[in-house]
Length: 139
Image (tube, rainbow, N blue to C red; front, side):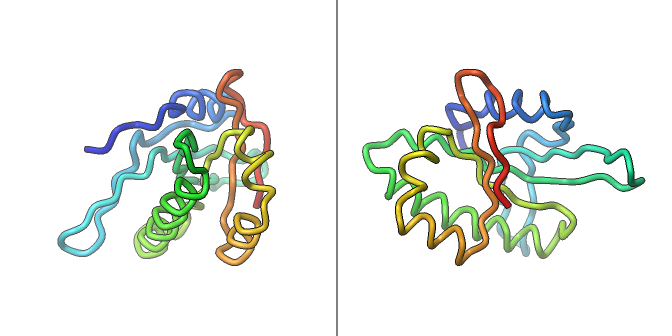
């Protein structure tokens, strides 16, 4: 079983403050006969104007190692595999990569992360780990 990210609870509380209901912690999905992935959170919320709700999956990253680029490589590979699994089994669920605001304001402003986010259409949740709030949704 994989360990929860250092900021797991901060993101979870931030989502709950925005009226998301945490439905899975973690969201476990089988792929084929041998593989299972565990995405950090599954959440949903009802929309007032619709009968159906929004469903998301959130992979939380802290970017606390000595190399933000190394952390990004790992996060990107994980994100792309998780999106593939979701597309095969839970197409209604939108995958987000949650990153701390300090990392977003520094590392994610660099050319390579920006190009990757555009190329691979990565949806981001920017969170404040201290105040436990979601700062920005980037689609």
